[in-house]
Length: 620
Image (cartoon, rainbow, N blue to C red; front, side, top):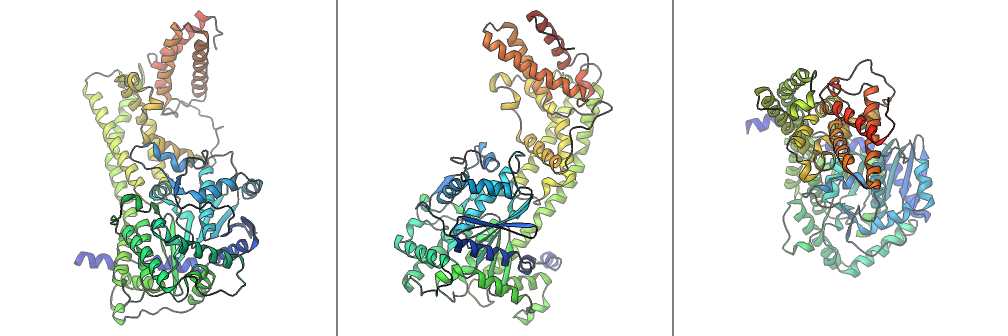
């Protein structure tokens, strides 16, 4: 207990500080203004440049929305528009990424319009804020995801920076989508604003087949009218007190089940697949608090919904975001006081928790206040973990560095005759070779553990962009992947599974290659830099895998009698010859590649003989 008290005295609760920072900026006010303009305009979306930023607002009134609440695979009919999000589905353990079928239908219909292509060209290389209210917010989120995915393709126009702010938007996708967004480190690009008693952002936590269809129809009709004509007087609720209570009970029951991660007594197929992603700004008239952990978001959506009582109708709650945003800005001018005097004697951390509860509209005596406090405390401790994990990883990296150094020494001792790659591939049971293999395995374990931690959001969001780790991962890939390739072909695994590039490459190397590529793109490094001497490590870590494929093609070409197949083999051989020759000329290979008895040097000689036998022109 003493250790825990000391820990609390050294901690600060910052979720309400982030909320205050957000509320003090003009972002929420301007975004809501654009949403109202889009809702009243009769168009699918509007865009307007405000200073250096382009606001793109999607209307909450969309025509041709399919009557469905079922999710659909985002990679199905989207024709590769969301490739990075579905990139992790190749793993057997990964579930498919699903999004709301109706929202996906709206996006695909919009994507093929001239207006959308004009928008894509208009926002190229600009700072963009996508925004939307209600289903317009869900559509804005999906459009933002598309542009984030397309930013990896240099040929497609994409914004220089992107933020998506939604107001009262329904949940968009399943847990696999939430994990994919975490994996791509895009959570910071989304801010979902939700008021204390708005049912719309919480509705999809419960299976909609359990909600009376007439109730949903009445709500949708009422919302559509009020969104289109905000100047009209808002009528009384279309729901009876009994229907309100029924809806509140259903929503609270299913959010609670999702929060505690337990099954509802109903069958599995009746459980909702929808889960939140990105950052959530939960607000009341008292203030706003920001969360980025999906589990914490679900728990706080439940706690805020269950505490206090709605001061207006369900329809009013969904349309009150403008009033709430304005009130929050006013409250920033007032000094907050903590209700319980004894809080002043406790830690700064405890006082911060109290301020966050106050901003959420949760009174100290409210039902569920204790649970909400515990959730905020746990969220803070979970938030510290990524930075602590990153610091611990740095220590482990220092401890594993001698393994890397020993492999470097092994490489230097093999460069003269046969080369690094072939020495390891044809190794015998010497102590030096065995030690190198053991170091290879230890390094692989370290980097695989790092990838797992990254996948599970246990490291800081910008970890993959930190120069220390990008450079360390890049050096590891260039140094050790040739050994993995050698081990693959030494065991003749390619005869059973196929060649390394398509069937044997470990995922960690693909991840590290993408880190380095993104770093090079961000730093605008050119390809025209010339080396004065050969590289210490071959810059194509898969070079030896390509040599092995070229050896296989060469062997097949010697015996192939089918002219069409022979022509294809020769085409492949010429392409590799050109690639290798270019790397050698640019000195992007290590000197061991040109060792007299290396696989590459032997392949070059055999290729010359085959070209001579076939009467092909021999390259100088």
